[in-house]
Length: 452
Image (tube, rainbow, N blue to C red; front, side):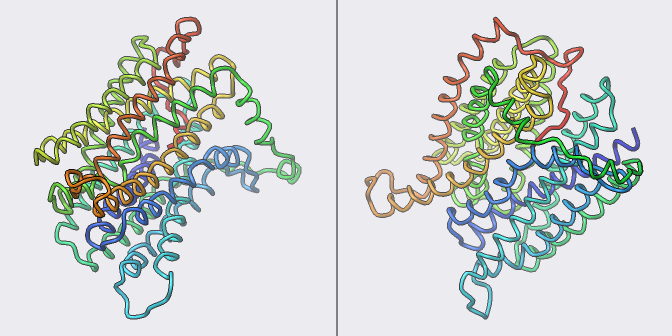
């Protein structure tokens, strides 16, 4: 247990970086630095768009050859270095992007910021993929569900604690404070991950023949998955549902600052509230699935919770009710957590029914979710900017010429996407009566190899 708790520190570092990328930095870029939401959304989407390669990274770590027999630790270590490098470059590139420089070099800020976000995203996905695979290696069939559930809770705990601490440190925003917080986070990432990976993987020297043996082909395994059963519809549900929940990721904190008038510290609390909601959704899904509840019906419950949460955020602006806004943030986390865990369980059922290998099914789930998340973030910023520009020119009429119209348009689109996902999900619910989704042993949620 002591080794597993120590290993789980890599999830704390990943949660902290996630808060920086999806919470604090997008608010700072839009409100404090005055950058357009479309540009900010494109920057935030860069690390998320790297995530579809997680299945490939996991496959490579499965088949990695080395003289001392390590498979996971090299990927965990180099992922840590990529995260540190990206965070070290991040604050300076953002200040240059915001115009805080005496030298006018064309596109320098955009190029440096894009490189920083890509480096950080690549490191984040490499670290989490290798770390979860290493945790799965360390556990046996009986303990694996609880081990990886512990890691998922540590991820949410890292997000919640980091959101509170970072919000407190940036309560009085200055460029110097931004540099200190982001680069301090880079050093903390290295420290946490060094402690996490120390002596976690045994040395097993390999012969030259073993290192030169051909690796299994990823393309062959992927082809087997795409040719099977209802996997395509499930991936469509994951893709559209993730679009529904993630279009607001880059806008929630700016909405709180620009429309609700909240400070940087108070909007950073939103990440902690989202994490609390997601943890509640995870707990509810675990209890319900253990009692034999259908995974597809649980996914539908998460989508309906998202509809209510998005509606609360929309109504918070005209009512100027901060409590309703915070409640909406908790509801978004609850609905997305419930939806993610339920669809993950359904993906595991593909392996139980022999449609695909267990790891590949989860990798496909992660690829669909991560690709949709990246597109959603970019689309959210583009829609917000485009609608706001049309409203300012009077193209939408005088009644809709308000600062909140760009934001609320995105939330209405997300509500429509939730209902579209319910329509796609319908046949899978009917199918589950004939071909029930298999749950792991003793009804526990096996979050082994949790992709995102």
